[in-house]
Image (cartoon, rainbow, N blue to C red; front, side, top):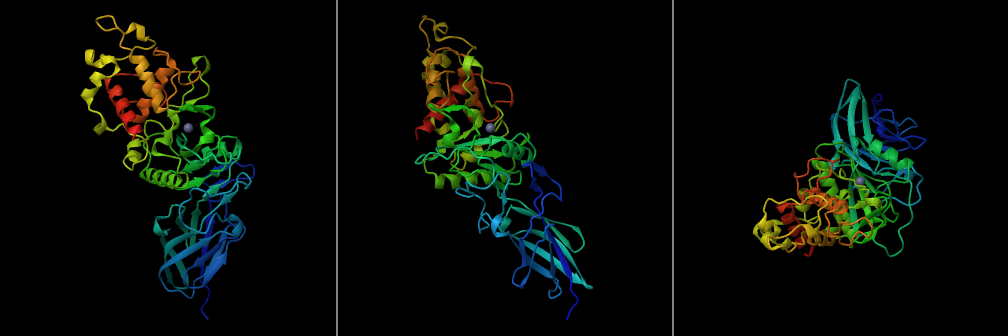
Length: 429
Ligand SMILES: [Zn+2]
């Protein structure tokens, strides 16, 4: 009988939720995963993690080589019995806020067994799974960060029967890790359905059957209360570029949601910054220009056939001469001055171009709010609400043109006019 050789597996969620429903982040001791099964596949070696998240495996019957370590949560912590990324229909409507659930995780691990001891070497999730990561920091011990796929957040109302979401609203957390966003979501009424981490790991927070308050008082395309019409996806980003893993995860998630909620067309995939937020009473412009912000590259989605698109093949630049009363034919360098009215923009023969009314009609057809009251009534004035709509359009459809996540950019010029016509034609496809 060989002497036991002990391999310790430590299961942690580095991403942890404490008793007061606050997220802690990054501490190796943060959140032990207890009562989980740890198994070396094909060799009948298994153990269950104790209250500190540790499980010891006797690997004396093994020789050095590559193995698969399989982790299975206890039944109460299981999200579902599959390693596929979390998606539509996952989660439930009854978990207490802060409840974490996991999916099974399999890792490739190489073990060197000699001289009565074991040294784990490189270990990584099988099949490119993103819901875990492994670290070797002590001899004979494998530390695994097992990321929850479900962190139950406080809930809104059940979506009314027969009401299926038509919109996916993309957000940016404006923080470096999911922790800060989770603290908001766990302790307030605000929450999104999904949170996409920097490494592409998707955490679900609210079931789609529940209205998540991620859009506040809001308006889009004639409808107020975008939250009740939509599924919200928060993307972890403090500033700067989003990661390829995040684009991949968002694209996968959007497709999965479209499969499950067929009323969500590609034109219903929107950024939070496109939607009017709050009532904009007294022309006080409540706006979320930085969400998802200037670094989010919509072309990544458009290239996958997701989202509306200002498609150059639909409308040649020169065609703009015939639009907006011909104002860009007469003055190619023109920019619409703020607060000007149609009656003040005249041709040589003193007839009005009526460019603002036409602009408002086009913005309105795309869904943008063009006034602070009913969102749709045309004023013929380049007022604050119409300027905000132009800003919303530019940051969505004119990549690289808007330079600030905070300051409004409401230049309506020839290039913007061309992009607007292209987006409109795409919308009718
Ligand atoms: Zn947002």
